[in-house]
Image (cartoon, rainbow, N blue to C red):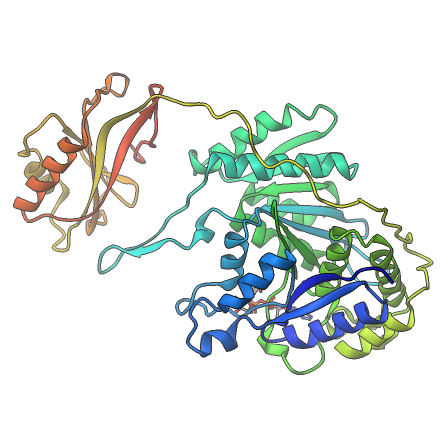
Length: 487
Ligand code: NAD
């Protein structure tokens, strides 16, 4: 046996320890040439008072091994500590989340027997950054940040992946009919990059109909590339459509590091009962073996796993009277896989991964950086308006402010409430007052930051509660902001 590759292991929370035990048991029985090194992360670490959920020493180990196999981690809903999963993905720059989704009919019940798709999800940006603020008594905000390099990197990765693995089509999901700037950027860069890959078909779908089609006609998809939040949602949809969220594994790929995990969470409802399906984590471990260039062991384990499915040895989540022979627990399922190491599936095509088969795809952005002329032309001033002061009164007050900026429009939750509002009962407690250097959008003049500071000082004198400002820019004359709804 040659040198063993060191890998970092984190058991995680909930069902994490039991599915990780099952997975490591299989890796061990398959004599995978790996040297697992354990770190403690997640709930236990949080409860010890470390709010990051990961001890300092664990980062050191991760940087040394560069590969992490991780069980799911519990993240409290609605409050409490931040998601360690997101921290890991962002800190380690794991920009691509690769989630294959395959049906295993006729052995696992599904209405869609021939699904074989890969979801490639942007992994570092979007509302997932969790930048949230409470602005007034009643209003909360979550920032959606999308960057050009982030879009370029993930979209280029998707096309390179398609090319490397002989995939035919890449579909992009966005909601750019509504989020014209953020999702619009993703779509625009998709179009630009797609044009460079002439042999690969491309299409764009709005995420709502895209998700509906994924649920009703999943076979029509090959590779889907999308933003972080949509990617998260649609991968559970896709996994469930082919049988269970318990089946799918994922690879989180960066330029230096990689992390492998199941797509599902810590399933606290079934934790400690030995009924969880370890297949999602096992499939992630198979992706890991290919990544560290151990294709033979990956093939050995995947073939044994396929044979186990064919033999009808199924955990509760995929068990059915018509398709299964025996309902087994987590550890029994692992034993069944181990017993079949060396066997080939007879219905499914046996896999034979080749050396260097994997996703070390050299495409990490690096597209030419275009420098636009950025011009400051106005400001949106957000005001907490707690006494429901009518918009026309607020406008009258703001019109008394001195300086080169004109009040153009007042909006609430994106909808115009002044001037000429047609709504009867507008929401008035959170107002965005837009000041521009000209009312003519084609003739906006350059202003200085001092102009905005002077305006804010006058707002302060008028006892207006300014909660936030957003500068308005043009880039090479093109507006860097959207118009208000109804403007
Ligand atoms: P979940 O994926 O944990 O569970 C959803 C449903 O699927 C549950 O009914 C569960 O029993 C079932 N399920 C999940 N995995 C299964 C498996 N391997 N075998 C059989 N059934 C399985 O989603 P949730 O309940 O929304 O989240 C629970 C916790 O997990 C939350 O704290 C959430 O933040 C966290 N989470 C973590 C990750 C991660 O670590 N990457 C991902 C998603 C959710």
